[in-house]
Image 1 (cartoon, rainbow, N blue to C red):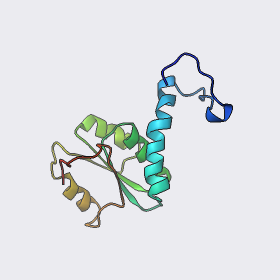
Image 2: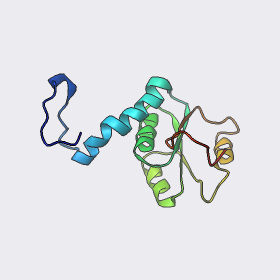
Image 3: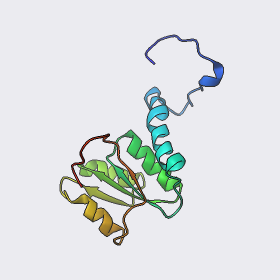
Amino acid sequence: MLTELAVLPEDGVTRTPDHLSDAEAASLPCAATTAWNALVEQGQIKAGDVVLVQGTGGVSIFALQFAKLAGARVIATSSSDAKLARAKDLGADDTINYKSEPDWSKRARELTGGVGVDHVVEVGGAGPSRNR
Protein backbone atom coordinates (compact mmCIF):
# COMPACT_ATOMS: atom_id res chain seq x y z
CA MET A 1 0.00 0.00 0.00
CA LEU A 2 1.20 3.48 -0.72
CA THR A 3 0.83 5.35 2.53
CA GLU A 4 2.98 6.75 5.29
CA LEU A 5 0.59 5.79 8.09
CA ALA A 6 -2.11 3.15 8.37
CA VAL A 7 -4.12 1.49 11.10
CA LEU A 8 -4.22 -2.27 10.61
CA PRO A 9 -5.22 -5.26 12.73
CA GLU A 10 -2.15 -6.64 14.53
CA ASP A 11 -2.72 -10.16 13.21
CA GLY A 12 -2.60 -8.87 9.64
CA VAL A 13 0.97 -7.55 9.71
CA THR A 14 4.40 -8.73 10.70
CA ARG A 15 7.68 -7.02 11.48
CA THR A 16 10.28 -6.99 8.71
CA PRO A 17 13.31 -9.05 9.77
CA ASP A 18 16.36 -6.86 10.37
CA HIS A 19 18.39 -8.66 7.69
CA LEU A 20 15.98 -7.66 4.89
CA SER A 21 15.88 -4.29 3.17
CA ASP A 22 12.49 -2.68 2.56
CA ALA A 23 12.71 -3.70 -1.11
CA GLU A 24 13.51 -7.32 -0.21
CA ALA A 25 10.69 -7.48 2.33
CA ALA A 26 8.24 -5.92 -0.14
CA SER A 27 8.80 -8.77 -2.59
CA LEU A 28 7.82 -11.48 -0.10
CA PRO A 29 4.04 -11.07 -0.08
CA CYS A 30 3.83 -11.03 -3.87
CA ALA A 31 6.63 -12.96 -5.56
CA ALA A 32 7.38 -15.46 -2.81
CA THR A 33 3.74 -16.24 -2.10
CA THR A 34 3.02 -16.74 -5.80
CA ALA A 35 5.95 -19.14 -6.19
CA TRP A 36 5.03 -21.00 -2.99
CA ASN A 37 1.44 -21.37 -4.10
CA ALA A 38 2.45 -22.62 -7.55
CA LEU A 39 4.91 -25.26 -6.38
CA VAL A 40 3.91 -26.22 -2.86
CA GLU A 41 0.20 -25.55 -2.45
CA GLN A 42 -0.99 -26.32 -5.98
CA GLY A 43 1.93 -28.32 -7.40
CA GLN A 44 2.57 -30.54 -4.39
CA ILE A 45 6.27 -30.54 -5.31
CA LYS A 46 8.40 -33.35 -3.96
CA ALA A 47 12.02 -34.44 -4.01
CA GLY A 48 13.06 -35.70 -7.41
CA ASP A 49 10.61 -33.55 -9.38
CA VAL A 50 11.91 -31.44 -12.25
CA VAL A 51 10.89 -27.78 -12.31
CA LEU A 52 11.30 -25.42 -15.24
CA VAL A 53 11.27 -21.74 -14.31
CA GLN A 54 10.76 -19.26 -17.11
CA GLY A 55 12.73 -16.09 -16.66
CA THR A 56 14.76 -14.75 -13.78
CA GLY A 57 12.36 -12.34 -12.13
CA GLY A 58 11.18 -12.47 -8.55
CA VAL A 59 8.62 -15.26 -8.86
CA SER A 60 10.98 -17.45 -10.87
CA ILE A 61 13.90 -16.95 -8.49
CA PHE A 62 11.73 -17.71 -5.45
CA ALA A 63 10.41 -20.78 -7.29
CA LEU A 64 13.97 -21.89 -8.02
CA GLN A 65 14.87 -21.62 -4.34
CA PHE A 66 11.70 -23.34 -3.07
CA ALA A 67 12.20 -26.14 -5.60
CA LYS A 68 15.79 -26.69 -4.47
CA LEU A 69 14.66 -26.73 -0.82
CA ALA A 70 12.17 -29.45 -1.76
CA GLY A 71 14.90 -31.53 -3.42
CA ALA A 72 13.82 -30.86 -6.99
CA ARG A 73 15.95 -30.40 -10.08
CA VAL A 74 15.60 -26.94 -11.66
CA ILE A 75 15.96 -25.86 -15.28
CA ALA A 76 15.95 -22.07 -15.73
CA THR A 77 15.36 -20.14 -18.96
CA SER A 78 16.29 -16.56 -19.83
CA SER A 79 17.48 -14.50 -22.77
CA SER A 80 20.48 -13.30 -20.77
CA ASP A 81 23.58 -15.42 -20.16
CA ALA A 82 24.49 -13.18 -17.21
CA LYS A 83 21.11 -13.82 -15.58
CA LEU A 84 21.44 -17.54 -16.27
CA ALA A 85 24.85 -17.51 -14.56
CA ARG A 86 23.20 -15.91 -11.52
CA ALA A 87 20.44 -18.55 -11.60
CA LYS A 88 23.18 -21.22 -11.61
CA ASP A 89 24.76 -19.53 -8.59
CA LEU A 90 21.37 -19.71 -6.86
CA GLY A 91 21.06 -23.43 -7.51
CA ALA A 92 19.69 -23.99 -11.02
CA ASP A 93 20.88 -27.36 -12.24
CA ASP A 94 20.58 -26.51 -15.93
CA THR A 95 20.00 -23.30 -17.88
CA ILE A 96 18.73 -22.54 -21.36
CA ASN A 97 19.11 -19.24 -23.20
CA TYR A 98 15.94 -19.09 -25.28
CA LYS A 99 17.39 -16.42 -27.61
CA SER A 100 20.33 -18.57 -28.68
CA GLU A 101 18.22 -21.73 -28.41
CA PRO A 102 14.75 -20.79 -29.74
CA ASP A 103 13.58 -24.41 -29.56
CA TRP A 104 14.21 -24.36 -25.80
CA SER A 105 11.37 -26.78 -25.00
CA LYS A 106 13.13 -29.51 -26.99
CA ARG A 107 16.33 -28.76 -25.07
CA ALA A 108 14.45 -29.09 -21.77
CA ARG A 109 13.13 -32.47 -22.87
CA GLU A 110 16.67 -33.54 -23.84
CA LEU A 111 17.96 -32.48 -20.41
CA THR A 112 15.38 -34.79 -18.81
CA GLY A 113 16.23 -37.78 -20.96
CA GLY A 114 13.07 -37.33 -23.01
CA VAL A 115 10.75 -37.42 -19.99
CA GLY A 116 9.95 -33.70 -19.66
CA VAL A 117 9.39 -31.64 -16.55
CA ASP A 118 6.93 -32.06 -13.69
CA HIS A 119 6.25 -28.36 -13.07
CA VAL A 120 6.52 -25.19 -15.14
CA VAL A 121 6.53 -21.80 -13.46
CA GLU A 122 5.38 -19.60 -16.33
CA VAL A 123 5.23 -15.93 -15.42
CA GLY A 124 4.27 -14.33 -18.73
CA GLY A 125 0.54 -14.42 -18.13
CA ALA A 126 -2.26 -15.39 -20.45
CA GLY A 127 -1.78 -15.15 -24.17
CA PRO A 128 -0.07 -16.97 -27.00
CA SER A 129 3.23 -18.64 -26.19
CA ARG A 130 6.28 -17.62 -28.20
CA ASN A 131 7.94 -20.99 -27.78
CA ARG A 132 5.60 -23.94 -28.22
